[in-house]
Amino acid sequence: MNLLVIGRGGQVARALARRGDAANVGRPEFDLQRPEELAAEIARRRPSVVINAAAYTGVDKAEDEPDLAMAINGDAVGAIARASADVGAALLQVSTDYVFAGDKDAPYREDDPTGPTGQYGASKLRGEQLALAANTRAIVLRTSWVFDARGANFVRTMLRLAKTRDVISVVADQHGCPTFADDLADAALAIAASPKHAGVYHCAGAGETTWARFAEEIFAQSRARGGPAAEVKPITSAEFPTRAKRPGNSRLDCDKLAREYGVVMRPWREALGACLDDIAAAGWRLE
Image 1 (cartoon, rainbow, N blue to C red):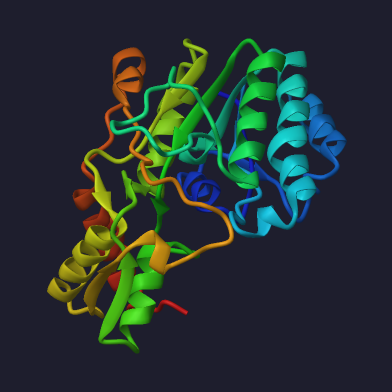
Image 2: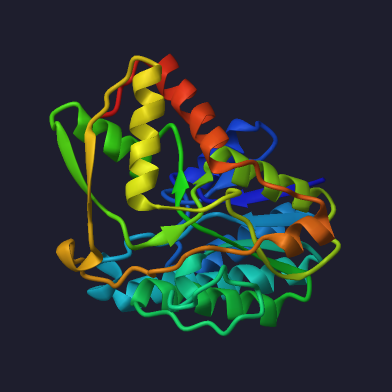
């Protein structure tokens, strides 16, 4: 497999790089607002599979920078998809639960109607549409609530706050499936090894929770490992307003991925334990 991974600084891109087999290109070497540079690199390398793990991820900032979000998450994806198709490469495009409105009372399936409520979700949905339209071998992999032992994410934020606070308020009315970046990277590589089925797939940690219960589990497992912990105070989304509306329901039904690719994600609590083992091994350095 001749694999090209686009992206460098994000959690999924870093997890893919840790696997050692991917050639990484992305910012700062390539400006995603100038997708012709990426297209030229794809034409030069002629990969068999391209994984696009690069994205504009500022959910709230996107409300004030909709054009920038659309350029990176939408237009650049279209250019990457066309360039991949030109060399006969499959494209695996990493996407998000934010393409949904979040008001369904059950986990979202791939064929459920989309309806993003903010600019970030709209830009990611546009990227999905352009990828599928430009490359008949495109695979869209939607995920949710990604965490990692490195970088900026919910797990590390909770642990960092617990070093200075006894009580932390966390939203309790948003539901989702936490996904370990390492597990997502493994799933992407398994798909890339034999990208036989194009289309949209959901890929998230097994099981579901709320942000508040997620935080409680983080602190319980951290405490057991000698790490920082705090008491969680459950609050409503209305008590923690954000610039962009968060989906109330981010749960993703991943049965299609298991059925067509044989990829089954491990339970999120187990994955969280592996993540915390990594953080503990690094001395609980969270800054």
